[in-house]
Amino acid sequence: MPDATLRSGLVTLAGRPNVGKSTLLNRLVGQKISITSPRAQTTRHRLLGIKTTEQHQIVYVDTPGLHTDNKGMMNRQLNRVANASLQGVDCILLLIAASGWTKADEYPLQLAAGQGIPVILVINKLDLLKDRSELLPLMEMSSRKAEFAEIVPVSARTGANADDLENAILKRLPQQPFLYPADQISDRGERFLASELIREQIFRGFQQEVPYATAVSIEQFRRAKGALHVEATIWVEKEGQKPILIGKDGQRLKTVGSRARLAMQKLFGTRVHLHLWVKVREGWSDSERSLRSLGYSDET
Ligand SMILES: Nc1nc2c(ncn2[C@@H]2O[C@H](COP(=O)(O)OP(=O)(O)OP(=O)(O)O)[C@@H](O)[C@H]2O)c(=O)[nH]1
Image (tube, rainbow, N blue to C red; front, side, top):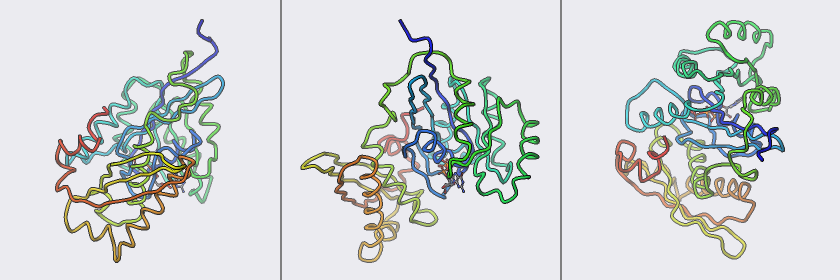
């Protein structure tokens, strides 16, 4: 007989680019699953982060930031993924920053509020608010914008109020058996997570267009002699981006590699050997075939 005391469900994190969705997902799950960077649109995939306790299982859905710029096949694809992730879930977390509503928050609000699903407004980056007295007027003003199930201020970075948020979410989960095995923390395999950790370092380490012109594919991923051996290709769009990524005497690529390697060791709990190559695939972000082969088109 199914256990009637169990609750589980799907919870989508939605919001404009850079508002802190991936940081919050990692905080709520208690593990680094989704990569983060100070740059908008770091997240390109739909990704599940699963938090299981004895009685509850919350399946968080991280999505690319919703934005109104629909130019370019990559942008359209990111919006499609984010859009589809708002449907058929039990609860939506709509994130804004504590600095207040911006124009870029309106589109995600419109989409989230139009689903007929409870929306919890999460006011993130509370730690950046110098004057806490600004919070109450922001919450009042927000409550007039839409019918939110709850409004919860948090800091994804410090973890402040993360427990309150979890409690607000738990109230909205249906009574049903767990959706995933209790020990599973993501729907993505280790190869995918490895490629994301490399992409994260590129987003953190490079300026301007280079991160957006980059994709990563894993060529080899095997365990041998007590270590994990990973070989990966970093794809760029133009010949001229290659030397930028590699740097003088290969120094910049080395930095990407050693930081990604350390992050992998932490995530996988084992020694990692990482080899990186940089190759050119012209116009990959605007070619449907290339997007598909790099894993960007199969997840809506
Ligand atoms: N100070 C502060 N910074 C935060 C907080 N949450 C996230 N950030 C920072 O905001 C930036 C963006 O965070 P992400 O989690 O990558 O944002 P995202 O919404 O997933 O971004 P996209 O990939 O564009 O969708 C990073 O530099 C984070 O460290 C917070 O609570 N406080």
